[in-house]
Image (tube, rainbow over all chains, first blue to last red; front, side, top):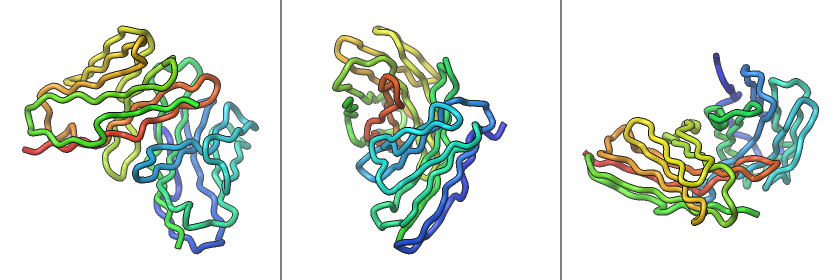
Length: 113
Length: 110
């Protein structure tokens, strides 16, 4: 099992450019999440999904959009990147009734210049 | 909204020494998770505590949940260089997602 796979692993964007981060899980999990991690701020929830076709806003959703067209994929989009979006992005997933916590991807390190 | 405060923010211990990391919630805890993160990598699930007074161990790491104090502690016995990393606690926010503390950075000197 690959678990949770994030692509790309690294990316440098210019201010104003757009990009999509892909998260794919092969565990048939219902719930998927996007977090960002910044020094001194810990992990903050951007958006999440409780099932295929559903999305909801988290703590810091501004400047991001998401889609969950297929159960196994959760996409995070930046329409017009800003330097404040420089961060490490983590995707996570969990199944219903799970007692083993979320499974996290290895992260995408994004730099916006 | 719920907040998790971890203490200390960072610590350096000598190999072989014991240490404790605390996680205190501003609201009632329904489930408390501990994760470990190595620099540049994702989070690895350590253990989950659900009931007050619950205690779980994995190798030399023990976690306890004090429901009344809304607090959990993570204790490492006889620390090793492999224990170095960032430890994060996470808590269920009913109906949404896990929220996390800011993390405790552990360095183990040999």
